[in-house]
Amino acid sequence: MTKLKTLSIYNLIAVIGLFATATVQADDMDDVAALVNAYIETESDLNAQSKLMSEDRIYIVGSPAMRMTDNEVNMMGQAFGEKRREAMDSKSLYFATIEDQIIRMYGEAAVASFRRNLNFRPSADGMKNGMSNNTARQLVTVVMAKVDGDWKIVHTHISPA
Image (cartoon, rainbow, N blue to C red; front, side, top):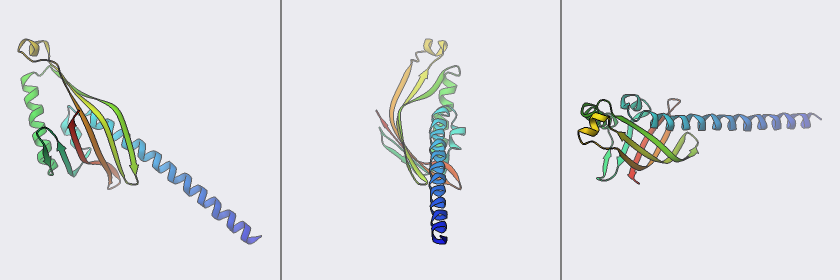
């Protein structure tokens, strides 16, 4: 009878362990999905977007191909482009949308793949000065990892769609 009770306790512990693991994985999936959504939502606020990334994030973008391994320098370059766009037409709209998002979890790493549309809509004055609506369609892969307990983007690869 003692062996049966011991076996039942071990079975109960195993079931609780499986439930706890599934809950952690579900929480991580929610956290990763929220990180990808925040990445898209902060497309026009690169200061906020940079906080979603690890310091050593690798950034690859195509046409012409560029690979940046210094995330701080990379984000400074992107911020320069954002300031230029703002100076040219401060009332324009710049935003991103996402389609066909797929996320895969691998323990404390995750990969997201999606189509991203970067949308630029000039103001009326911008249109008068020759600016036009523009949408860049891209294929994006983002690799995320837990860094000090928080999910961070550690690698981004962007190609023209």
